[in-house]
Picture: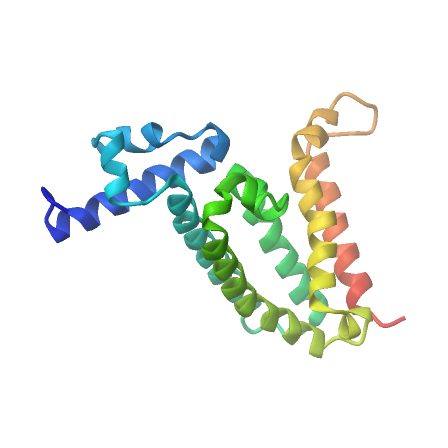
Amino acid sequence: MPGFSDEKREQIREQLVESGRELLLTYGPKKTTVKDVTDPVGIAKPTFYQFFDAKSDLYIEILQREFEEYMENVRSELAGVDEPQEALERLFWCYAEFGEGNPFIQQTVIQGNYQEIIGSGSEKQLEELVQAEMAEFIPLLEGIQSRSDGPLAEMDPFIVLGLMGSSIGLLVLHRDEYEQYEGQFEGVEQGYYGQVQEALISTLARGLTVEG
């Protein structure tokens, strides 16, 4: 790569990832262009392709880092927690916080629009990334299942993930709508979204882990 030392290449690549991440988390992937990413780094748009073959490769790099940070948080939250209901609640809260205020994660992970956002050209890389993350996540969930006497114990882990996404994930996607209700209707006060979220997570965790 003419014109850049190894150290400079690494520095620029890291700056592109950071610039891209900030833009994706703020505006989402559909409103982020290559020029948007390169301008803060001080390189021309064509130079971007010396570091990434396509914008989708940058997206996958950022998604991988987001996943790694998420899994770190999950492991930290579950460390030393033996009671299955509390562990599942913590897992659900980690998932909710992962998506809140993060358009990129909302559109790729929660809505499941991986291919639409990232592109079919990187399908294999994306599949490998998701499989690697599931290989880390599923054992944590199975550990909670092994300690539960409730329905969770016999449930397929992917069914649990489906429940999590279709309830907690859906609520995250509609957060703005819930917050608009605050003050508009009698009895709906500030913090309505948070109250609904807390009730949902605690009820779901209790229902899955408590016998009978």
